[in-house]
Image (tube, rainbow over all chains, first blue to last red; front, side):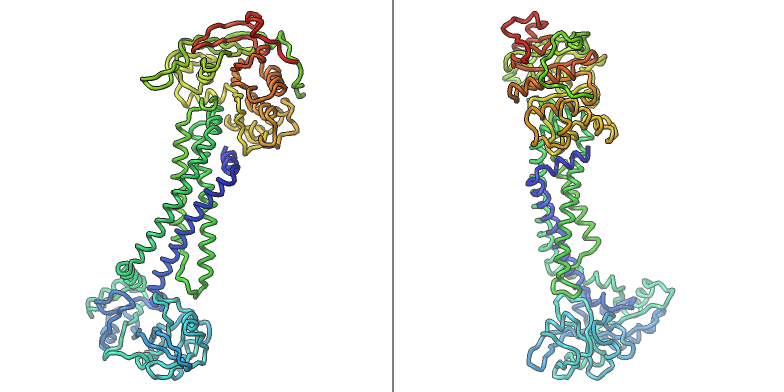
Length: 374
Length: 260
C-alpha cells in the first residue's frame, strides 16, 4: 500500500509540486542561512584554525576574542617555556596595518608575525610560493582572497606598510576572517616594523605540549604559573565565537531568518498537505471501507510525508550547496556547509513534514468509512 | 476464464439467482443524525435478513434511509441501537479494528461514483483488496488481471480511470469488489452515474459474476429499471422496512423486466 500512497501523492502534480516546493524553500532557507551562520562563525576563528601544529594558545586573561588580543610581555614567553610539559613555545603577533600599492591604492590588512626561526604559525596551505621564502628581506605572504580584494596583488609585487617596503613572496589559502581583511603573514621581527605598535608587541604565545602529557594539565600549569589564559585552539575558537554571538546580534538575525524559513515552509507544506488529504478524503474513506486499517492509512500518509520531505530536502540542500559552492574554497561569501547543519536541517524538515502528515492523518482518522456512500 | 457478454439478458430464474439462506440478520436497527434539538431518525427499528444466492434490492424514495442501512449493514457505520449477526459473527459487538478486519475479509463494495484511485491503473485498483489482505504482489497482480478479463476489460489493465468511460470504471470497480471473493457484495446506486446501456451492462455483470450460493448481494437503488435484476426487495420508507417482497410479489408497475 505504500506504493499506492506514493502514486496517490504524485497524481495531482500541481499540488504535489507545491508541497515539494514549499519544503524545498524551507530547506533552502534553513540550510543557506545556516551555512552563512557557520561560515561567519568559522571566519571569526579563522586565524586560530589556520594556525596548525599548536596545542595551546596563551594570551592575556582579559582577552575575549582573537580579534582583541592584548600585548604580553616578552618575559611571559620565557615563563611559559619554563612550564613543565611544554615542548616549545613561540611568539605570535597580530596587528592591523594599511597596505599601500605603488599605484596609490590601499587596503587595511591583518599582519600576522610568526617566529623568525621556526616559522611556526606560518600558512599551512600555500597556493603560490613557499613559506621558506619568508626568510627573504621584507617578505610577506598574502592570502588569495585578500590579494584579490586589494586589486590583484601578484607574487613579486611591492607594497608599503607604515612607509616600509614589503615584497609579496607567496600566496596562501588562508581562510577568510570575520572582517574579510587580507591576511599578510611575515616574520615576527618584520611584522612589528610594519605595524605601529606599543612597547609590548607579543600578541599571543603558541605552545606545543610534550608527547604523552595531557594538554589540559599543561594548560592548567600555565595558568597557575603565569596568570595567563592557556586554551586549546578549539577552546579559543569557541571563546571568540561566543563573543561574536553575544555582541553582534548575528545569531538573532540569522536565527530569525531560519525560523521564518521553517515557519513559512511548515505553513506551505502543512496547508498543502492538509488540503491534499481533504481532497483525497473520499479515496481514504474508500480504502477504509475496503478494510484498510488505521495503521495502514497512517503508514501511507507518513510515507507520503517522508517522500515529500526527502524530495524537498534533496532539492533544498542541492540549491544551498550550489550557493555554497559558488563561494569557492576562498570565496567572497561566508558560507560553510557542515555535516551537522545537514543533520539538523534534515531533522527540521522531517519534523515539519511529519507534523503536516500528522495533521492530515488526524483528518483521515476522523473520517467515517461510510462517507464513501454519501 | 471467459469474459462475460455484458449485454446478455439475465435469466431471472437462474440457479444462482435462487435465494438460499440468511447470512446477515439485523434486528431493531436505529440510527439518528443531528443534534438534540433537531434529530433525523434515518433508521427507525429496521429488521432485515439478507440472503445468500441472490440479489437483495433495497429500494425506496430519496431520504428513506437506504444509504444509512447499507452503511450499517456493511459495518462502515455504527447503529445507535440494534443487533447485526453476519456470517456467524456479531457486528454490533465488534470494536472498530475488528470491523475493519471483517470488512476486509467479507465485503466487496461497488460505489455510485466508482471511487477508483485515480493515480492507479485498472489492475492496480483491482489489486487493492488483495494487497490489504496480505496477498503477495505477484499473486495479486495475476488475480487482478484475471478478474479484469472476466469483466471484459482484459485490454484495459494498464489504463488509468481517467482513460476509461464511466461504464468501464464501474466494471473495474466490480472487479475490485469481487477479486477477493467476498461473502457480501454491497452496491450503492451502481448505475446512477451511468447511461442506460452502461447501467444494464453493469447490472448484468453483477448478476453474472457476483450472484453465488455462498454470497449475498445487496443493491441499493431508486432506479426502477433495475428491479428486474432483484430476487428480493426490501422496500424502505421513513427509516423503516415497509415491505419485504419477492420479485413476483412486487406490483407490476414497480417491477420492470431486465432490459435486453
